[in-house]
Structure formats: C-alpha cells, structure tokens
Image (cartoon, rainbow, N blue to C red; front, side):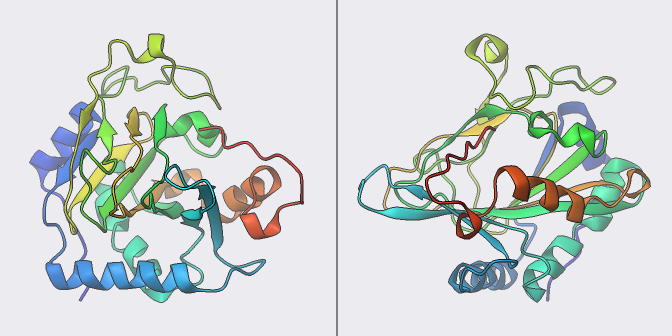
Length: 256
C-alpha cells in the first residue's frame, strides 16, 4: 500500500537551510516495485493526441536509435501515478507552510545512451509566471549512480530568506554562474526520495552505461497561489508539445 510521507521538524529545517532534502528508503521494496510497474505501464501505453505526453531523443550510443526521454502529464491517465502524486501533497504542504497543489508531473527515463541535463534552476523555465515558489519531489525508480547520471544538487543562491535565480529565464546556467556552486552527486536506490525547491541548482550527466536510470518527479505550489496544472500544460503545448502532436520539419527547442 502506498504510504503518505510526513516530515519531521528537523527534516523541514534542513530542507529550508539548503533547498533540498534526501530521504533514504522512504518507500518499501514492495511499494517501489509497484511504482516501477506503473512506469512500465505508462511507457507501454499507445501515444495518442490528448493523452499523456511522450518525448524521445536520439541515442548517444547508437545514432540509428531513438529513445524514450520523458513522459509528462500522467496523473489524468494512470491511477497509480495519480495516487503517487497525491501522496506528497501533505509533505510538500509542510515545506510550503500551507496546503499544496500539484503543478506538474513527469518521468525522466535516461535510458542507456540518454543525454544529461545542463545545470539549471527549474524556475528559469518560466514558472514564476504561475506562482512564486515550488517544491519538487524526486522518486528513484532504478538505481541512479555516478555512471548512469544521478541527480546532482547545489545549495540554492540567496539562502533561506531570499532564494533567487542565479541566471536568466530559458537559459541553462553558465560556467560563470555556477563557478561558486557546490554541486554534489546524490546516488539513489529505488524507494529513495529527494525534495528540492525551484531555486535549487541541479544537473545530471549522460547515461553511457547499459542500465536505465528512471526518475519520477512531481512538482507542487501553494494552493493559495492557484491550481495551474491545466494552464501549465496548455501553455507548454503551444511551445514544446509532445512528439506525436508536432508539425513535421518544424524545429522545437528544449530550453532548460
């Protein structure tokens, strides 16, 4: 049975100090196995217009292969993944200081040959037009290691009182902007969870191994600032729609 995570006062304090929090073995082995099955199920659903969103990428190991890169907008179409997103409303509300609401959800697959992510802060992707502050929850589905591209995090700029963007919207952080950041890798096992806010710089490397590195992410904002899930995906569809909805020969740029 899927358990609801509740954070201690010490964990909440640590999160607010750094902008992220790592919880080991937050889910049991049996629950973790169910979550992996849900990821398998939705990745095998047919790609259809108006359903969950699927993106692909070329393999870095075999230029003739096209890999699944990520799936987004899953909660309306899969009961298990919807329950998973709902299981974090309480703990994200603890971190936000009031009731939380789901903003978006996705699975980053990073299959063998999958590319990495340049250093960035999630609020760089235009999120501040919806709400002022967000909490991400990462659930490890497959073992994430240094070799296959585990999540790497740095303490957020601005500290607790005034978290801020270190760079510009829609642009990954530059070498100059990250020069003083203390990026550290956080290898994880299935069932581990990482909470991090929308100002916490993060990155990950390529996966050139023979093992998949799937990570689930759901994001939350304060309910008092509105429920923006439908608006977010409506706006994103205009600029970066799922592959099945794209116009042939039109170039779409993944910015952050």
